[in-house]
Length: 291
Ligand SMILES: NC(=O)c1ccc[n+]([C@@H]2O[C@H](COP(=O)([O-])OP(=O)(O)OC[C@H]3O[C@@H](n4cnc5c(N)ncnc54)[C@H](OP(=O)(O)O)[C@@H]3O)[C@@H](O)[C@H]2O)c1
Image (cartoon, rainbow, N blue to C red; front, side):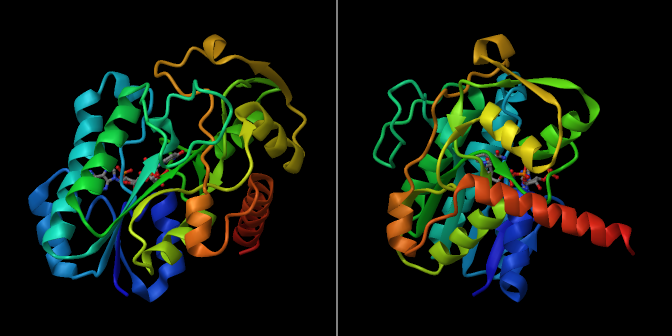
């Protein structure tokens, strides 16, 4: 298998590259720009993969409200060009989308792949448009919706929730965290394993893929602080009090049973995933400082 990983230096991309080893063709932003069709065709024709995994995205949820064109170029057009390329070359394409395609207002039941999306923000609309292009333009497609990613290669500009909490927890004596948004934070290490197994199949389609269980951001922060032994006082606040620019779904837990049925295994509970991430993070910090 030769798997082109687009967005290879991001959180998910870097975990995929690490797990695939010699089968990976890592394509960082400096090597390919998915917003440019000639870059897509030239680079992929040069590499000759049999599978393309798109982890590249414009992920600035709040900034997208004032940068609609930027978000649409990367999250809609980019996947569209990849879908055209993979259709023409008869390749498998796995594209990653988001739980934010749902509006999160209807009940407290995990969303299935059959439920109707209703994006609330520009970021969500751009991701929904991108997944629709992949689903309709590329026959050998896997579209994966996931949620609240955290991984070892969090970029300095964007970070991830876990790294942000650890930083703020060390700097502050108290912290306000939203307690009325529910989802399933997901480790990119586990998601990468699921993606690799799924791309080995011919079970094309749309899938939900997260760690299991659910929590609010407040509960997630509390568990991060408990495992990391931080005594910062956590204060629950509402989404309205937090006042972010982009609207977010209040409930975006995804039902992953379709993926579980195809893979024969499911991703571990979010608490175990977090604990594993923090343990491995400590071990790599310790080994770096002992060198
Ligand atoms: N992060 C989350 O909480 C979350 C939640 C749900 C779904 N997702 C989806 O999961 C996927 C992976 O997310 P992630 O957190 O791993 O993302 P990430 O860490 O932000 O990585 C994205 C990578 O894509 C690259 N990139 C951006 N624009 C590009 C372009 N035009 N052409 C080629 N590469 C480009 C970025 O490079 P530069 O940084 O150099 O621009 C970056 O290395 C994305 O589709 C995202 O929308 C993420």
